[in-house]
Amino acid sequence: MHTELSSNKIFSSRRNMILKRAFDIAFSLCFLCLVFPFILIFVFVITELTMPGKLFFVQKRTGLNGKTFKCYKFRSMKQNAHADEHQATKGDKRITRWGQIMRKTSLDETPQFINVLLGDMSVVGPRPHMLKHTVKYSALIDGYMKRHDVKPGVTGWSQVNGFRGETKELADMENRVRYDMWYISHWRFALDIKIILKTMTICFGNDKNAY
Image 1 (cartoon, rainbow, N blue to C red):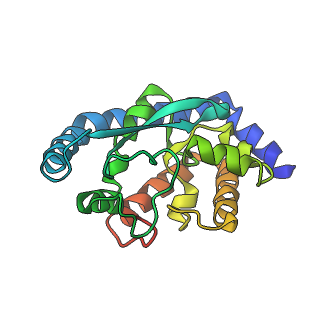
Image 2 (cartoon, helix red, strand yellow):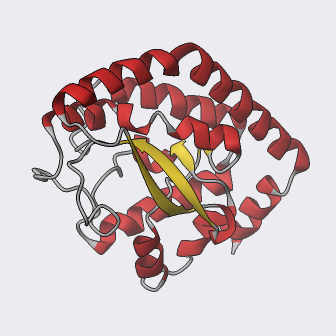
């Protein structure tokens, strides 16, 4: 109960929400104008040479207040009929060699800054899950839907603390939700900056859960 009251107080503050949204707009605009064009050209060329097909992968995911939105990514898998049903797993044969590199460095996630600019996502927040997982885990984990009290993020507190990627066991998702709820109840602007800096370090490191 204390966590819920804390999160409501923090994210119902107009000042906090204006600050977070202003930062999201400024950060995503800078990234999309100054960095993303080079990433787009680079990814387009390599993708065309190694796995012809659609450049972008668009998937419906659960966002703020449980509403559905279209989440953008660079396609890292061979086109398949199970992309909306099955998580990527270690050694997943659907992922191409180029796709593995993109996922390891999180290049595949960079189009989500478009989602940030559109207002569907925030730079930092709980990661958005596929609709199937929302239905599944909301029935298994108490308070699961509370993570949708805020906008989902391109990166999040769970991810920089090792809870990224495949959720093999229920405990994996429970831990992710636990870290998401800690973030919501302890949010401050400095925490977002810390998560962004830590994410950049992880992207250039060796994240064993990035596959």
